[in-house]
Amino acid sequence: MAGTKHAYVPIYRRRRMGATDYRARKKMITSSVPLLAVRVSSKNVSVQFIKPATEGDKVLSSAHSRNLKKFGWKGSPKSVPACYLLGLLAGKKAKENGVEQAYLYNGLSLFVSGSRVSALVKGVKDAGVDVPMSDDAAPSADSISGKVTAEYAKSLLAENKEKYSRTFSGLLKSGFKPEDYAENTSALKQAILKGAK
Image (cartoon, rainbow, N blue to C red):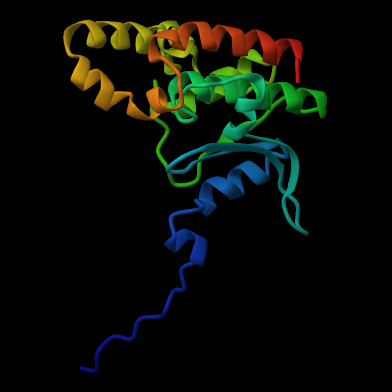
């Protein structure tokens, strides 16, 4: 008996790269609600509010973790507090552009409760944009405020200065003390809400 012929099924390039979940995307597009696209790279985090269209996606609003520096952010651009602040900034900009609701689109990455992505979504929600996510999925208030990082830095400094220096070497080189995370986060939140810059 001759071997069974199998039809070749092409796989889209972005699916092979792990950049696009076409099933999830199709479902979201048909809802006509803007997508909240989050991308976490090795150094930064970016967010876009996208309106899918047949002629191509239209970016309604966007923000990047580099934008936080303009407000005086000195901590890591990928930390939980930074992601929350980026979400707050992105959500505020989106609201000003008429976005009232969005669905999170995280590509093929799994959504994890208490993660940086959930912190970002929490910031977007606090800015007034409705994004489906349970409050329980967000990181704790202490994590978002930078209190957890600040207290860990203080205890590590008291117990093991060498490990403290290794752990926070990048921040220390830039002249920022990780013990000040909570103060810096609070100041940034107020600046973003007031639209200082």
